[in-house]
Length: 125
Image (cartoon, rainbow, N blue to C red; front, side, top):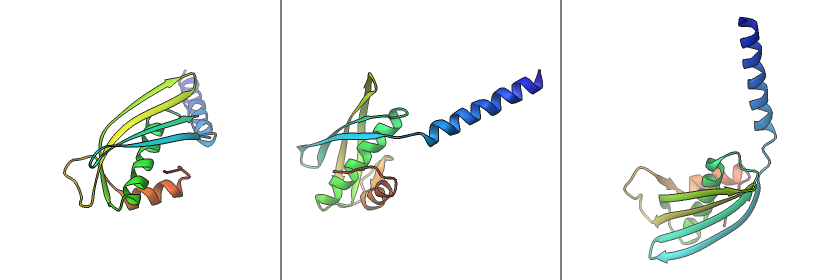
């Protein structure tokens, strides 16, 4: 019995590793809309996401690059809504952008984040 459990765990680990190796995201649209002053809406679309976090990361990358383009250094995440239908993932995120590090827990350094996104092959604005 113990051998069967160990074998099952080993096989599930292999399946997980294989899923990680075969992650091939199809990054599609990025739409940005300046809502009011420093409040920006990012809408992203992709296929092949493993879960919501891949879509959230894509939106974060868009926010980081947009922040730099606007001449700012930081962004603060306000909210992200993620939906999936038929393998099509969509994200609707809102960030504030600023020159100085904003208050709050969900802030990003735009330069560091954009470099990380480029390093990981995630497209930006």
